[in-house]
Image 1 (cartoon, chains in turn purple, yellow):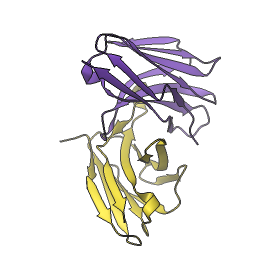
Image 2 (cartoon, helix red, strand yellow):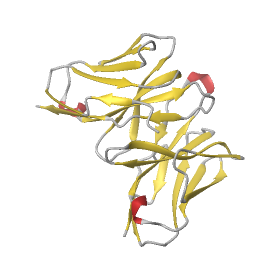
Image 3 (cartoon, chains in turn green, yellow):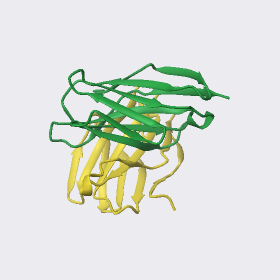
Image 4 (tube, one colour):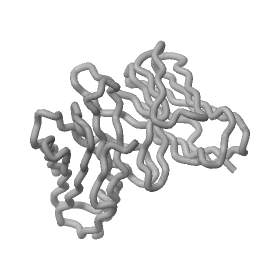
Length: 112
Length: 114
């Protein structure tokens, strides 16, 4: 069953604007990861945040994690047309199975 | 060459046929996975393997089987394909050593069962 649920399902913005996507999950986790998928292609790992971390940065990406609310957010600053893709959160549950459970994704469209 | 290679890229097959999707990796990772992606459903885990002698069922293993021929090769078989197995299939690898838990995905196999 799906662990993560992204919100919104779709997001449309202009170049230069910031894009924020949210992810909620149900169980305790070891870490949470964000992936990008360009149309029909393989997923690409963007960033990982561990359960004992609250915020992490990588270039124009900022990820936050609130384990008390079981939620995470991905912020892409100064969006570019090339950021157009689907974004997925994935959780590594604290259940001993050590596999990732993916959400359904947020489709981001960045218009020039 | 890609780190994770999936073959074929696209395949159309008939209901009832047996089909094999292949995955090979040059990452040297012990862990390999098969996921399927359906529109609106995200990715769901079919099978995974943590080493050559380890095979585990995922969330949706019915109708599928796998073989881990070597550390670098992990194949997925549909014993008797049915139309609702039409989907985009991804192979992925990971390595927990050094705390790097991110998955590396192949480019996918688009399978259509008619």
